[in-house]
Amino acid sequence: MADKLRILDFDIENRPLAYWYDGMTTAETTAIAACWMDNPASMKVWLLGPQTLKAMLLGFRVLYDAADMVTGHYIRRHDLPILNGAMLEQGLPPLAPKLTCDTKMDLTKRKDLSASLEELAVMFGLQARKAHMSNTDWREANRLKPSGIKKAKERAMSDVRLHMEIYKKLVDGEYLSAPKVWRP
Amino acid sequence: MKKRGAIDQAWVNRQKVIKAAIRLKHSIDADNKINEIIDEEYKKFYKAVQEGKMLPPFDPEKTLGR
Image (cartoon, rainbow over all chains, first blue to last red; front, side):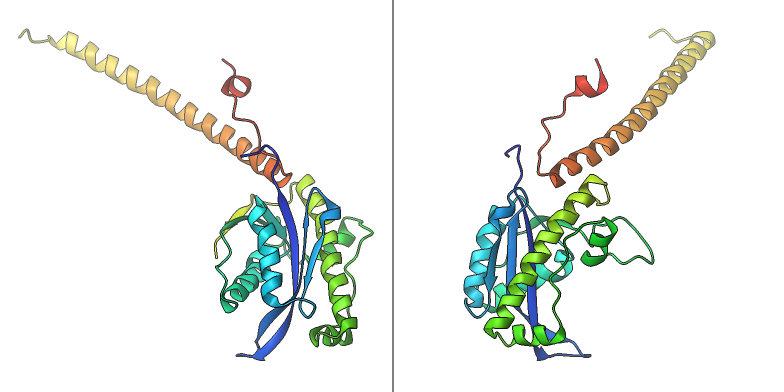
């Protein structure tokens, strides 16, 4: 194994697709943003509308497979299972097990303290923020209107950029427990 | 076969207890040291992974001395 590890930071946006149970809905991925931790210029975004879901998944999978570890906020309970479900729906092989650092699940134990990306950014005094989207913006994005897709793209990219900054703060401060293997 | 006398047997028994006590003491000390080092190295190893680095192989002499 190389001395230098490749860490992929990623985030997805998704839209509700069908009513399910207890007010729950099924979900469909509308945007995926991913960036190598050691190269902020490597940001890649896949968007539903301009691309098919299958093309998005195949594009993401190339980076996922090349990564020694992936990181993101709540990825083990949200992003990775949704992407893996999409793989199933699209007739693609499931994602391979992967070492993950989930900055929500692996964050140090705490009580009565929000651990959202936005709150962590403010807590660490970072200037970067999530690209805000109103309910109307989300409706536009989820209808795959060009203006909405543009906003979803910005949102996904800003989430990854912000997460990369927060990740570094959390690692430096030793606020994260050891990474864990996610198995689909 | 020559049978041990009661005094000789007492010494053999005493010797066994001494050996067992010393082995146990060092074994407990070793376990404590192992737990201490493993705990430190576990944190160090995964912090390096989170920083995108693989640590070089463990060097016993450097960490534990000769």
